[in-house]
Length: 127
Image (cartoon, rainbow, N blue to C red; front, side, top):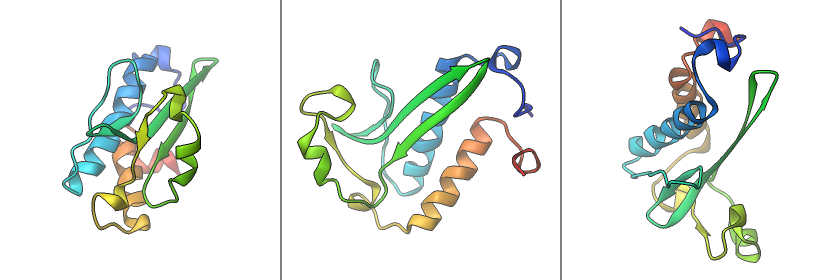
């Protein structure tokens, strides 16, 4: 298991690998609800068909990553109609509740477990 206090250089993981692992976590959660999530080259995040369901950004400082993740589960999507989401004109967004019957708390638990597994953290290390 990877030490969560270890910097990314020593862990052998680069930023792209971290992004891929977090994206994979979201894809696995979506798959549990029988929703097919996909990556797009040059546009981090996860898409369902032509709509973005999750956005992702990482910041690296002193060899440590700070994760920014927005997974649209059940929310008001109207504000996205007034902007260019992620800087992409015409990009449409969706949410998991529009694709499957979900409970927020359950999705949250599944996402935390999936990210923990993908990044190689143990529950003890997270405490």
